[in-house]
Image 1: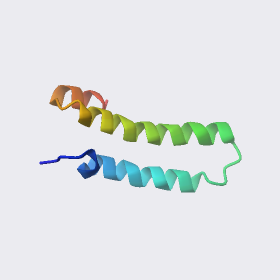
Image 2: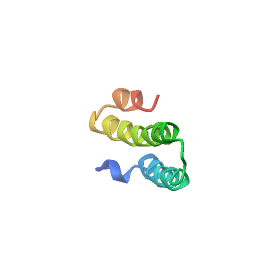
Image 3: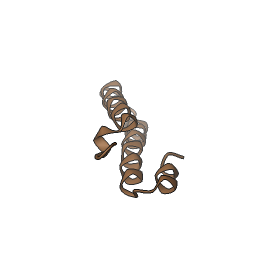
Amino acid sequence: MVKRFEDLIAWQKVKLFCVKIYQAFEDNKDLGFKDQIQRVVVSAMKNIVEGFERKGNKEFSYFYM
């Protein structure tokens, strides 16, 4: 049983993807685009955490949509 959101495989994979995105866009000069892409991956991590905290399968799955 998963007790912490950090134990979720989905969260772990999104975290790694987030690090890769930040590295890939490190030298990007288009600051608006860079900011938007980085906010998207951080938002994905936050959605998983928020869904996990809801403690219900229906509400949990809502945050994956």
